[in-house]
Length: 68
Image 1 (cartoon, helix red, strand yellow):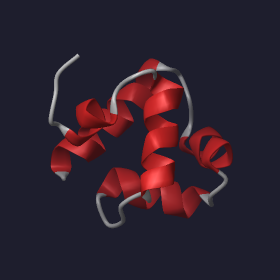
Image 2 (cartoon, rainbow, N blue to C red):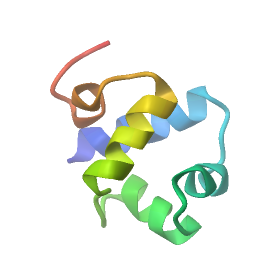
Image 3 (cartoon, rainbow, N blue to C red):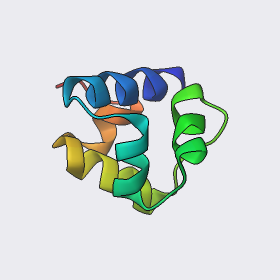
Image 4 (cartoon, rainbow, N blue to C red):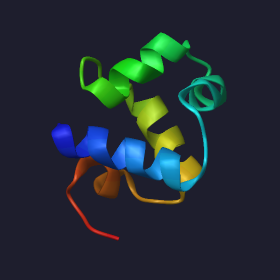
C-alpha cells in the first residue's frame, strides 16, 4: 500500500495540514495517523472514506486504483 502512504502525505501537504490536525479531524491519536503515513497501520473503512471526503478525492484515488 505504498501508494496510499504517498498519496495521503501528498494530499495532507497540499492542503497545508499537519499530522496532528489530520489526527484531530479523524478523531484518532497523532501516532495512529503517523502509522498510516508510514504504512505500519491501515485506516478503517470509515476513516478511509473520511480522508477521501476531506481531500475531495475518491477512495480509489487514495488507494492507487485511479488517477485524478
